[in-house]
Image 1 (tube, rainbow, N blue to C red):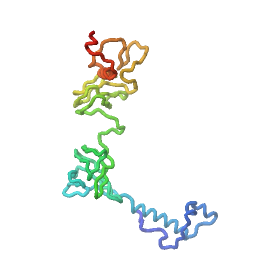
Image 2: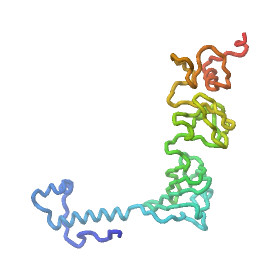
Image 3: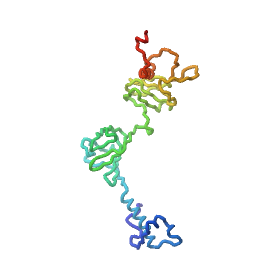
Image 4: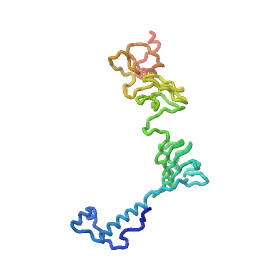
Length: 273
């Protein structure tokens, strides 16, 4: 049962205020003398008034409902951002002191256009997806995106491999299907396949649709091209012996890019000479 905040202790009685310095000291200011009835009334009257203020000014969360909805269409201040609201969209309006906050769990794809009437984070248009959650501050002047939480984004913020996605050289992804210490760097730009590839061992190249990846060990922070002196009978995975052997550019795309950028590449004519 909700307390009756309209009933304020001592509101019909005599109240004697306690000076600010004494109030901050607490009961220590009394010494051996108990407070008077009037001081007691004032103190508890003040506590009830504070609780009533909190109750009057708290944010009230109503039952799920559409915001400014007419015939199932939620119209934002910018007419170009109207979108259908139906039973599939879970919309909660949170009424505050100035305007309100709308918490929307999107059920499907929507195109939101950044404008003066709909201010989106990053000042960029947004394409929603099913399960995404957005928090919007709704006022008479505009709707402002406060936070946005994609349903598919991992909590850690790392990039997880995605199917049918365009990747560029240098892009790095991870996969829950691979060993935890592996990461994958794109060495040939292209689109990933519909199904996730088998990632293989460290140092190997992996074909993925029209893209190509190399498997790295995140525990090894050695930059590409750096010589590492070691006493081993064979090169570690992902490394080559510096013994002057000929290797194919296609087999070592990152090393080829590094060699070009470092000015270590001779022309075919000079090499043949």
